[in-house]
Amino acid sequence: MEIREVPNKEEWEEFLAACKEKTFLQSWQWGEFQNTMRGKAWYFGIYERSVLVAAALCVRVRAKRGSFLLFPHGPVVKMQNANLKDQNDNVKFKILETLLEKLREIANKEDVNFIRVNPIWERNEENSRLFSAFGFRRAPIQMHPEASWKLDISLSEEGLLSAMRKTTRYLIRQTQKNEDIQIRQSADLKDVEVFSKLHEKVSARQNFVPFSLEYLKNEFSSFSKDSNISLFIGTVKGEIAAMSFVVFWSGIGFYHHAASLPEYAKLSIPYLLQWEAIREAKRRGCALYDFWGYVDPKTHPNHGWAGPTLFKMGFGGAAHEYVHTQDLPLTWKYWPTAFFEAFRKMKRGL
Image (cartoon, rainbow, N blue to C red; front, side, top):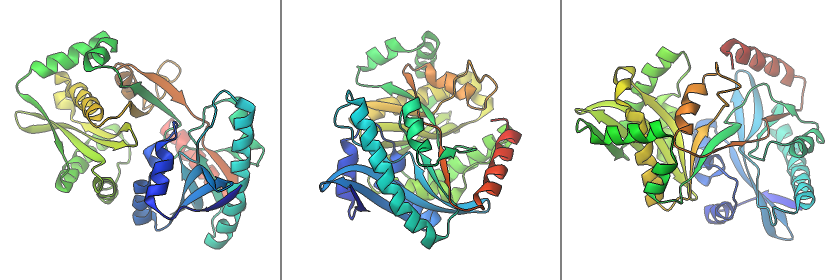
């Protein structure tokens, strides 16, 4: 196998379109967004006899806690035959081997302390062992979701409604009947500013750090160039009560950011907002809707994501759990970073 940078968006996106397991964090647009925010990203392709078999978007991260190379939800591997388990494991081993050889060169040039891989490979013993074989260790925190709740939306709208939890279906229909409630979509960057203010209010109440306005605007701009993102806005008598960011990419709709005001909680607007996003995904030809972060509410009832997960589960679907985020230490400077991140995670109760 050999590794080289993929020179154009067409080749990159065409390859990912043929892959089953993927998220927009490996899209060409996300790379452009990361270039804007972090200053450097690489689109690596791993080739077998000149055939592209894996794609790996690599981002250089420079933060107060340390500098590292990050693979958000990558590498993405195109499996030839899902039933040939041993063969697929061997392919993934060779891909990691080829990738790490290149990354060690880059790490020296970029003066980074470790490599962090956040793969969306199925969480199982075999995949975990693949990373252990190269000296990786479980990261103290996750950069992006390590599990997601996904819904097959190939059914008709009536079929999807019938498969929902009874309460979810009831709340959607009740909200649809309320003439004071309206749902609209926006591609206007000015509405991102409105969302940011709403998000700040929610974060202050729930005690988490919100994404900055710069972050939200740059993300929106990167995907809006191809009309791959939309803001869903729920209003009550013209007043904004709830909003969400939804990315539509490579046949999948992704529910990425959301915020709603508590004073409108009894009106159940987020249910209708989510349903309209699913309907839009279907109109765009998507076969899957990814609700993004998931945590098992039974085993982690006090986790910050437990409530939102129960909300997502009401729409139907299934959990998809990935290998835990993996770190490969390169210098001693990794360890203070790992200690700091572990302490911060414990303090937040995650």
